[in-house]
Structure formats: C-alpha cells, structure tokens
Amino acid sequence: MALYTLYPDLDNFAFIGFDEKQMTGLCSDDPHDRFDFHNIPKSFKKIITKTLNINFSGDCDGLTGTDIPDIQVFHGKLFLSKEAYKAIGNLIKKDGEFFPVDYENGKGYIFNPLSIAEDVNGLNESLSIKNEWDDVENIAFHEDKVKKFAMFRTAFDTYTSLFCNEVVKSVIKKNNLKGLIITPELGAEFGMAQNQKASPH
Image (tube, rainbow, N blue to C red; front, side):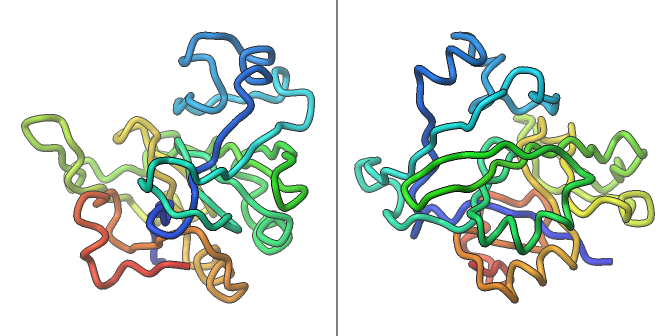
C-alpha cells in the first residue's frame, strides 16, 4: 500500500485566510487555541457551531499564486471545495470531522484530521529521522498498521503534514482536483519541489 504526503501548491494557488473576528469569537486570542493555527489534533465540534468565513485573497506580495484551489492543506487540515468534498468526503470521513465554509466560489468544507499514526503504533521509529536541529529529514510508517486510515497525521512532525493512501491520491487525480502537490517521499518537504516524483494536482 503506497502512502503519500500532501502539500499546498503555493506557486500557483493562494493560501487560505480566515475571518479574524470570527475566529477569536469562536476560539480565543491565543493562537494555541485557534482552529486556523492549531496543529495538535483535537475535536472542534463543540467550539465551531457555525459556518466559517474563509477567503483566498492571494495578496501575499507575490509569495503565493492567485488561483483559488479545489483542495488545499494548511496546518495539518484540509480545505475542500464542493467538488473535492463530493469526490473524497466519504473516503476520509472516518478519519476526522468536517466544518462547512463560505468562500469566494461558494460553499465548501474544512476537514480536521484526527487519525494519528502513533495511536496504532504506526510510526516506524527506526526509519523516521530528524537532523541535529530537530528538523524532519524522513518519515516512515508501518503500512500494515496505518492501512485502516485513508488520511492521517503524526506527532513526529508535530502534526503538520497530512498523509493519505493510494485510493485518496487516485481519486484526487481522477477528479482533476487542483491545489496540492502529492509526493511519495514522506515528510520530505524541503527540496520537494525539485523532486521529479512530486506531482501537482
């Protein structure tokens, strides 16, 4: 079973933005409690009780693209357009929770993944490597232990990256959902753009 890491394609697409007033009203001023910043997997079902207002303004001084994505990873979470939700929503629903959003192109969703590799002893500790500065150089999993997950995260990289299985990757490709870079090199974000195996969608 092949596994893949999902990254945002920021060369071509704008990065997600949130309504600051709405976020502080629902969560707090503390970034550690905020849904839009918070990496550590926890349920927000009792906190977020209304549709979230998001945007893809693309006005980041040229640091990102300007197109609006169909699907995008941010802080270990996943934005989904209506089309993306229709394509993969049923595949990943057991691995987390969905929140409805309004944005420039209408209605969509944000997926908050709650499946963690360590919960099933799925992290291959002998092959997961950090350098002397504690930066991740490689992540590996025991595939037989994480096979029940369609999408999951790991504490090894502080829950920042989002991983999926072959089925999810194939459906994203089949439906031509744009906004991601998908690579089989797990956890290798730095230098990923130069990796010819990384494929934008």
